Figure (cartoon, rainbow, N blue to C red):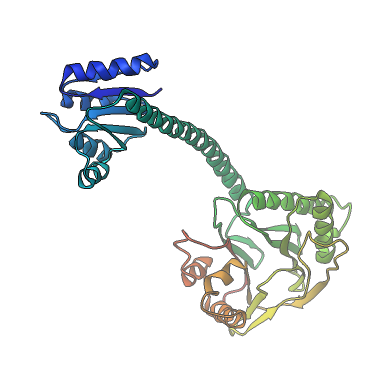
Length: 387
């Protein structure tokens, strides 16, 4: 509700303006003391229309304008000044102080009504915008709470770290560019000789991509359950797993695709069997002498093309090794300065020099302050033995 306040040190002027507005069905309050009027206006939690004289003995109209404009108010204030001053310099001074309009003295009743009505229309529009902003802010608050809950759920879905199985060590760094991430990873024991893992990056960021990671985890969990219940051995076949994820995503028609690596480490033979669904950068494998090889087989993104073919490859791992998988968010950290070939060489050098925890990698990439990431950044490290 818009409040109208009239301020003039001449009581008869206040009454005259008030009566004109009353004839049009507009209520108002008036003050002959500008200090008292200012204190009253400061208490209002409404849009305010102020009609006041320029020259007054306590505070002038110009001074009140400046005070109100310097005060942060949630609600809009529209100010009309009565004045006999009509020079460009005077009007400029009034506008600079914060006045919205002027009525020349002596004033015309019709002019006052017209300028008043114009100001009221503006205040009503601003009031409507304020109400709309409140609705939006309330909705955003609900979304923030939901997203925060989603973030907690996603974090709880990640595997424990560091994780050890026999001589094999697993750890990771995971940081979304937004509240929720399109990156995801997991590792899991299948039997006494096989441990599986996958590393995925859903196209895009935020909630929609994060929901796909939940669906992906459900898909993989079904393969794990099938293997452990001895109903099938699909979980040991990386190419089959990725092919099935591809088929399911397309059938679900979710409008999202992803890239992923799915791998099985056989601890008896110290081998890695893996399949690639469009993941890049490649796998980086370093031996005890810090010789680094990149390992990649071609594969299409998952969830885009029906009938896409995926293949498995077996890699004999060094007796002692470290294997690092980077999401493409790492590439964005270097892209401004380097081309892809240079970035891959840098990653090889970083992989070779890394000898301890995932925290060391975090420091290498300066990821301790991740406020302005262009993309989600995830790193998985798998190692065997002390290097």
